[in-house]
Length: 107
Image (tube, rainbow, N blue to C red):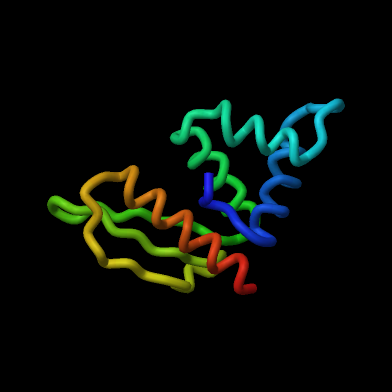
């Protein structure tokens, strides 16, 4: 899963590790388990939960026959808007997560 990179990956691993009760596996081993044994839809949900915890909010918007997204902070300030129409919610979510990670890494 190449959705999370840089310092975002480190932050997510710490967050994910703290959400679970693992005592034997290292953070990196636990991330590998997450990455390879978790369905993508659950990965998206976990990543969005982590983004919420760091004050970056992903918002999908359905308009007619397409889906777009925006990335906001805790004050609802728009950090990024994407008006490209994606054909599926899956595509829009994946691209929104990539952009939200970029926003996090730029901080």
